[in-house]
Length: 344
Image (cartoon, rainbow, N blue to C red):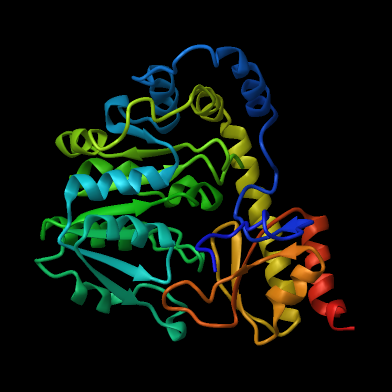
């Protein structure tokens, strides 16, 4: 079984609920600039990424010197572990497999902190017990994937301070934070934590997974330089750079998306609850739930792909994740689940 959602190449898929991208699609301005950038393909992209750095710096209100870009967030995870070379890494599970994949490249020990179903798979105070003096690196997602739960800013700051006092670097993945609202981000407090490596992605909020563009913010410039040295030259195509510049100006689109998800997610959650499923509270653009019915196989027969979460470390058969899509597609999903037409 694959480690990601979106296995559209092996299956006949009409509606893909397995990948958590923006239901509003790619902004028109971004589509336009991607078409226009074809004319730039006869030149090397800017190795210094100056135009992109300035655009994202303005978007985030942070110094451009504290930003580093990658060919997706995945490349940045790998750059972090190769620069830090952790002997011991902590990863709460279930969570995105990319953290484990990157940590294994360092060759050190990985400690998995298993969150519990009875706590809605949320990190609790006993988590601090595994953050011992010999830990070098912690991977943490906020909101978490696949569960969608969100730690408060105060809880995140407390955890970052605890790790700072023990010289533990923290990779905080905020790839889905725009769907919750920027007020939940730790970005405004980043200067307080030299151990913080904040990572985000353009993939989800702008629905451009094929472009491959992620970014890292860190106010520890010596660490930032070490990470940069682990990345290849010209790691961003001209398409990624031009699309990123345009995305950085789409503030209204991000706000519109947040409002849309805030309205559409409860519709989907309530529909699942009415059908008797155990639904976990999510703050992201996807929903995590449990069902004893063979939903993955049945829906796939109808051309609907959802994420079977049994291969997430810490989960088992019966856990599923679905993206929040547009109302018509959400209604189709709920109808098919309710009627279970594949069994007839």
